[in-house]
Image 1 (cartoon, rainbow, N blue to C red):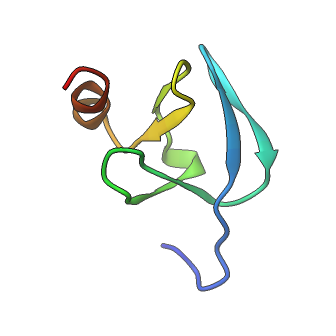
Image 2: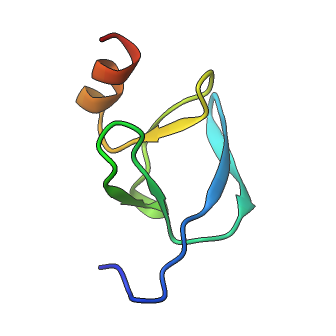
Image 3: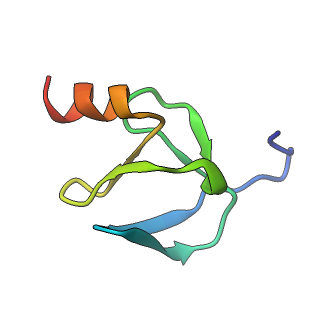
Length: 64
């Protein structure tokens, strides 16, 4: 559940994880615009430095 004072995080995406550059509780999916809680983030592109809400979205964005 998102709270009114939630802040987007800025992350640096790496092959096996990510590093928090600016603390926050969520990121925004590059494919859908939906908020992804940091704890639920499982898909991203290292090359594009973008987060995705799921595997299907990542595949669709990366291979249109």
